[in-house]
Length: 87
Length: 87
Image 1 (cartoon, rainbow over the protein chains, first blue to last red):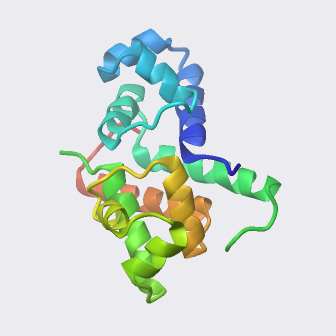
Image 2 (cartoon, rainbow over the protein chains, first blue to last red; image 1 turned 90 degrees about the horizontal axis):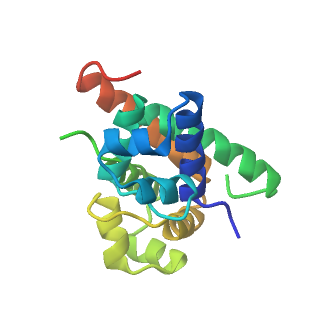
């Protein structure tokens, strides 16, 4: 199965939170989302709605342009591993 | 309200389809999604699941790394218009 966007998005959000040394609880409170929801989004198990993605990025203090650029970079790596793909 | 990811994603997908001169019907058949769903995604009215986003990008012959890079660029523009934001 191809790499899914929600998995890479979760990876980016989790990496940013860890880089800041913040807990799931801290960020979930700041973003006003449930801890369980944030945890599922980070693990790529749940699709984040655009509204909640915005809230989470605000809570982390990162712009969505940066989040999407990082997801794009992870896709480049994933696509390189999975072999040739439509351009 | 802040710019939403699904709006920019829809814009990117629609622009790519138009660039190729393809109809909603053609791409919806190729991606095996309903025409109504694809239309709503393009207009930013519905969140695309990661699986369907993959199917749509495959139908368009574009990589998700490219789609996400383009969404990131549109976010840069949107963030510039909306004034200073968290870095």
